[in-house]
Length: 316
Image (spheres, rainbow, N blue to C red):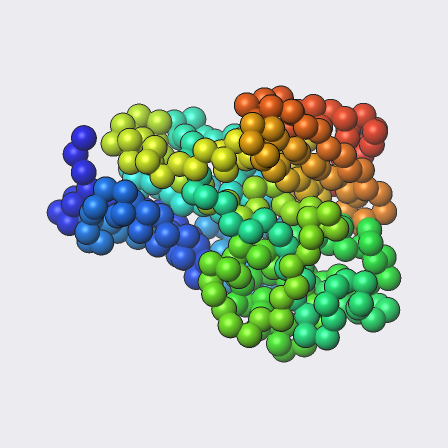
């Protein structure tokens, strides 16, 4: 196998946000350590995606208006297919459940904290918020879960990267917001009033906290390189969660939450589907062998769809 070098670096494609870059740097460092390669054997290539349009972010245009599946991945995957980059680093909660023909997603780094963090200087939980308080989020899942538990609250659109949303909170655009614990941990931002939310109280987005690395199906060098990085436990968990999401045909426009956890060779998968206004919620769980994760994901999806009825997502 020909290894990357300064004269022929491995090109790593990523979005340009500070968190996306941190994830790309982590991927580079893991590859360096695994194969004892110098830093100049790699090149970070920043690619702007449809979801990164600054004018739309500043205007707080909802994600469902901009688009849904592939909003943060399409342009990166096009670059990968063209051969402009060798691999692409993604936040797995942004990834559609089906990859374009010719691309493979079979490498996951060890998963970070999956929980959501409640960000507020004046309250520790959503139940401590004043009546009618304004909460900012661009996530339909978080919006639906919040309104399901506190229908009196006012939810406003809150787009942008982690730093942008924290700045909006500081400027008083909202009283509180939510961020992923994984992003806060990776960015190591000091002074954030974060309160992790137990998954028993609020299930996270599918694949939250996980980094995936995509490659071309015919690229044998990258397949060998990424094989050394793949975390088996994260893969087993995401296989179940993404099968659950795929059966529900989930997108940025459907409030779906889910989390798979391992205990030895056993896997527990919890899931929740909600109306966008939080008026209805159906939750459940299944357990079985970790190797049966995809089947368990489909089983739980069928279970929740049967309870909710065939027209549950028609409002989306």
